[in-house]
Length: 155
Image (cartoon, rainbow, N blue to C red; front, side, top):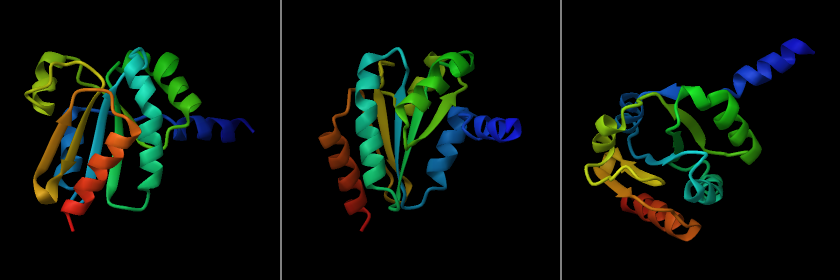
């Protein structure tokens, strides 16, 4: 029984990535729309919008849309905060922990207009050279509208 439990715990571990690794996904993404949300467990607007990301992710499952929820709290928060929170929420989108811990360096790489406030969401579609940035809490309606628009622009 213990090996099965250990396997489950290891398989639900959240990967850690550097911003460069995320950007490589976009560059190799073809016509896939990437919805990349930057969030933290301590951010009330972030937590409030996560159900919308979860719902829209489920609605677009099987289509050329990939949701990635990027937690910015760092490795130190993995076991006590991030992983228990993600398990409790039962989130459908991929969740990663950002390893880059010098925001003054990586924030401008995401979008030069970003003040650094969260929640923030980046929409990327490599095939159409589309990159849209939203520095605000996303409602279900607005999120679905942006994703739908980006999918339709690729047809």
